[in-house]
Length: 376
Image 1 (cartoon, rainbow, N blue to C red):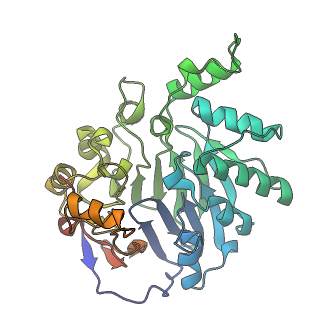
Image 2 (cartoon, rainbow, N blue to C red):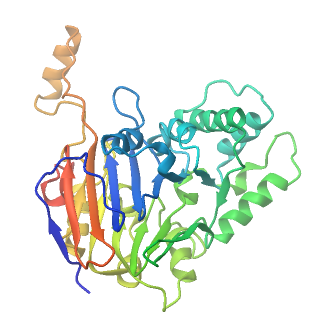
């Protein structure tokens, strides 16, 4: 089935969806992303977070612009503890007082050590910003006496509710796999010899245990890929998701492409077995190191669908208009050549529950993927 959609002209970002409108919005810059979802009837879900330059949590600012209060948020979720996915999440959770907190069940060794230290009030010293966010979330839970978080793993229903229009709304995790969870539990329960943890069983890369989800709203399905990668074994990553899938499972018309479009998160069978033909695809770039998506990544995605959008046209902060020699000369004189700070781009998908077409509206620097300035 070909994706059907309308490309809207730029409209005011402060127009909220109607009660019978589904919305999937991806917020992103060169570093950081968040998915904000209207699951009908004024019910909102926030998955991951990033901050504006003024340090405000972008998902909160986005909702505030539409006049949506934080009490409308029912789920606040972290897919994994990478810095570019959780910045500002504690700020969101602190004011979203009606929301369940959803955290990854499995962790890396470093993450579990930080979690355990936070639980007993031990000072871990300098932490990454992702692990600092973990600490801030724990502080919010304690100060507000909030319920224990939901620990996500494959096949778990995170949120389920029937809308006033008679449609079942369901957010279901498809990862981490049972094997990843088993290894994590085995590692933390194993006898330790000269070390607080036997860390070799637990993955070093949080992407390996990232929580991807399927959002079902009536007959509409959205696959949210988080940063889940392919992995090296059949019981890991996207291979495990595909193994667990039934032939009768519905296909998705929207795909939040995993891991910024990187090749290590691409699996042909995800496209052929889990998605409609020509799905609407959304992604946020990552500008650290050489950056992704690369040109080859963007070309691969566009060969699979003509409906692909990215939150930022040119995510790289470093000014690329001068040679490295000129740049070094400027820096030796105390002048640093940089582009202006990148604003948060928004790809907004909306459709009424009764409609067949998605309406796509881009805000800020968000563009069609064909306009993306990729690094080779």
